[in-house]
Image (cartoon, rainbow, N blue to C red; front, top):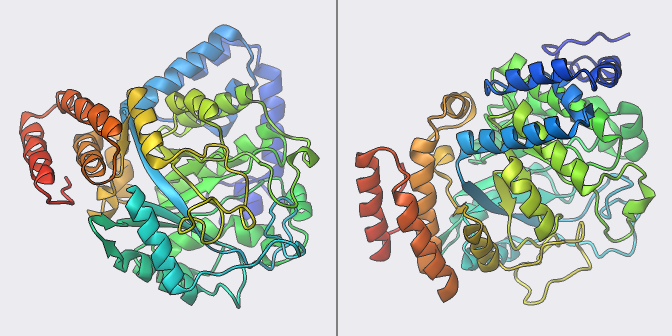
Length: 473
């Protein structure tokens, strides 16, 4: 029998099934104990985060007044740590060859009517130019798990190609990587290639469900998959990103498991997850989301986002174009700090004029252009940020987290966001978007607290107007 130990390197101990069951029972027992709920909320106001057990009590609590306090606190914590900046990125699908049998993914090996495709380096370059021409500076690369078709060498070649493309004023300045669990040696190679964050979704922390959902292929190995972040950190990768696919298993179980994984990383490596993603299962070729009976409503989804922000205040939270514009508008204030924009989830999709659907991993709900997404964010009072400065200045891992936890990261992030937005406005924006953006930048300059930093930022903004690029604090 495994025992719960957040410092263990064994998946069954740091994501302990019995501990989660005990946590859910405790939450059910205390969800109406409003004195305890108030005590937990008071603890959360210290901005130090919450344990999986305390956070699970809040998730179970349905008292309307406390729920409003949770939302208000999540919104305030988001402002305290991330201000009104929203970082923008795009996924880049390299290959949909896969040897796994994941029952919720159209790339599963038995799907014979999805065309299989793998980008050549020339095709990768075309995709990167198309993304640069939109204004993107940050990518998350994705590939199916296939040892022969998608070996680590192929991924490394793609990363090299992506960083090498300089088209007009375009440049991809940060490549995050979302590929299958691998070895310490391969993580070391990814680190040497200059990746940003290594992202790996757990899909579900419920081991029995995990084994049923991944019946065949290397991904069937629950422990190897769940322990991947420890190997990544052993390989020198500072920033890792967690996530579950909400809808596969009961959401309260997943929430507890997700927070236990964050606690484990903090306990063992001294630094929690750089990001947490919150995807929900969506329709795709050969996949019907209604076949999974654990789907969650928009209201529960919003509550999960708010409580992740409260429980892990320092982590970046990502929401993708799986979600509609209206859902994104609902959850961005509650804690989201990164969104994808103008995403195409098919292999080679960006170089095509019309959005191809035959190789999509999932249906994209938000199909607006990047210019439209940028304008929408600004109209809601957010600063769309294309900043990659922390990664390029070595502010990663514990160095980023210590600055973030101290609330100091905004001293450089705010001006960096304004300067990268200015680049977008000069190089890629429509007239309407540019007019809104210029007005926003002038107003937001006044929110830079240090006069010296404000003046340097003003000088850099003028130089960007003159055609010089890539300033950063």
